[in-house]
Length: 335
Image (cartoon, rainbow, N blue to C red; front, side):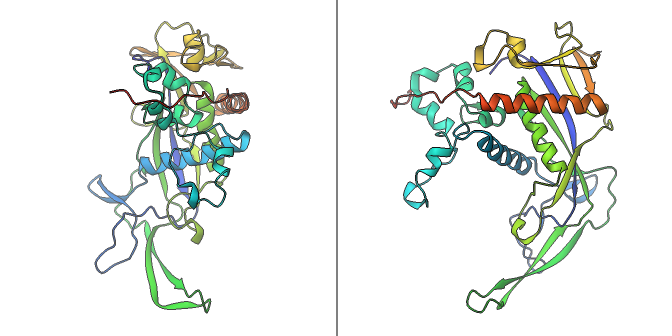
């Protein structure tokens, strides 16, 4: 989609554990804990981290729930489920659209070499995170320990036990041990958004706001009380990048200082299923500076707070007025 760079945004998200957290490594130790967190070799020693793929899954899952709460039958259901195994086989049809990927495969010639139609007919979640039809707009990096972590233990052990379903007490021989990330550990991940519509930036701000309010848990054992975190956008620059939210476009662009344009306003023709009114007014204006081939603007403090409010409002309005699902007849796949 769009073989050129139109606009970009990026920011660093700080995630701090407010309780024990476990993103399982998928293997148990021979003589140690039964469940251990993922680790990577970085800065000369092994340290815990939060995989970007896990964070992206948390973001998408949460936003699908948010969108479904604002308006049912807007996001798709990406996984095929045997209707006979569902408690209410009609519930999914009422709340979700058919899988975007399946629709594009079924569409045959309609979508062949037409990335604009694929994007236009995608649900909001697939437009941002991608589907089998095209790559997503957002990239979320692995979250590593913030600052200059020392070779100190940032993990602790927790005991667990299986419950006997008949007696309600501890089941003999069902004890297991967890190794979890301790409370008060801060990770940082970089989030990069390319060729974005403003409501997509608002979607990310919704997740950030809910994480800031402690409403999102991540990792395994959430029913056991694990996974509590809080997050905020870092306003401290690092590695030559400014803090806050940084937006950019090509130099000598027509975007005025008192507006921030999304993809729809940049295209200004309604292609890709975008809207021409895809912009927000900035008060006060935010000036730009040139860096290489890009013209950048940095949103911090009051400017960032105002941008978050405007972008979230843009997101809510778009979802409540999202067009009805495009009906695509079943036909043979292209060969």
